[in-house]
Image (cartoon, rainbow, N blue to C red; front, side):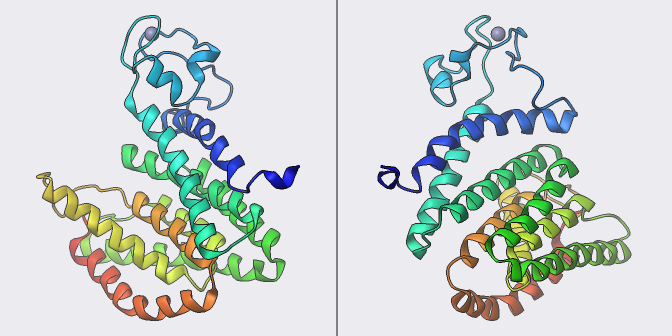
Length: 284
Ligand SMILES: [Zn+2]
């Protein structure tokens, strides 16, 4: 009977609940409030929420975004992160299906990585920081995933983690030397290290280049929206890096040969863009 349940169904069904938990994580972790031991409360009146009010997505829609007790508006971010978590599971399942990857363990890993990166991107976007409480466990989980999928690859993934950290550390040092101020945070280095642990050496340059490109795109978008983006504006680098790591993981699972071609074609211009963009355009 178990065969009747498609591999994608359990993670997709779990995703709104994961999203609900991520909503708690992204709100409480930056404030250093307990993530698991504190009951969920209305942010307006402080009332502890009942079980019916904790159903992801649906409770928000049924209550039309308002608290049952005091009528205060519930932040739309709760709904947004729940839907984003569903999106992660759907994209992970679709990517696996398109690539013909038939492995439920890999699918759960794709979802778990995507959900953790979603929380990190969200926190960095709001707070301009990437908490160690998320990046370091993600690094360990990446090495665990490599051991689980292919123990022979584990040393390479450990090397990629070290290289990722070192590359960002060097870049941050160069930036400081050239521009006389800090441009990249230590959290970014730990995040790229975690990315290296998950994706391995082969795709690491592609991920770094992709992250830089997404970061510059983000800066351009903010400028286009009329926000003043100058050389000293603080912009989060994490969201672009998170997206690039997840895409790198999803692409890397297909076939190594095709991905290697992409790396060969995209890497040289990507690396140039990365270095040039960081030094010239990237705000401090
Ligand atoms: Zn209330």
